[in-house]
Image 1 (cartoon, rainbow, N blue to C red):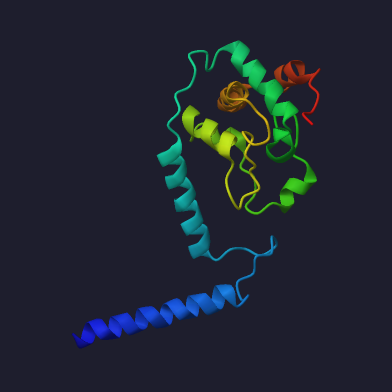
Image 2 (cartoon, rainbow, N blue to C red; image 1 turned 180 degrees about the vertical axis):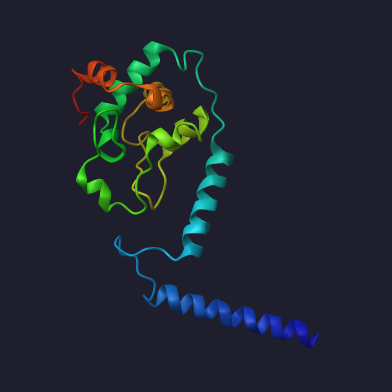
Length: 173
């Protein structure tokens, strides 16, 4: 019984220490500060688990068709996705280097996330990363599926194709 009392007391002390650390302003929320490894690990695990749990939508039958991929490139360009993630032949804008964590290179992400996972992330965004909800920004589900289809094809898309597909695109307001 004494052992349990000691464990309980240590848990209370640890909880109070964490509260003082976080709510006392000792934890820096500056974008220039690296997160402690434990924070990075926890946020990554939470993000992955959340995406896996919530990404349940089924892609449309046309997902991956050439027309859908081209529509996705147009939507990707019009919603400004290249500003943070770049695109074939397009570098991301300098301000994206100030985001914390860094926006992922979609050539690498394309193979790791399923179409429903990409759709969910694009539609809902991810808190504390700078990734906005394009569903709230006015993108339709069809546009979001098209963007997801394009992201899956980014590793295979040439610079010339991307420029051709997006030549007449105007940014969304």
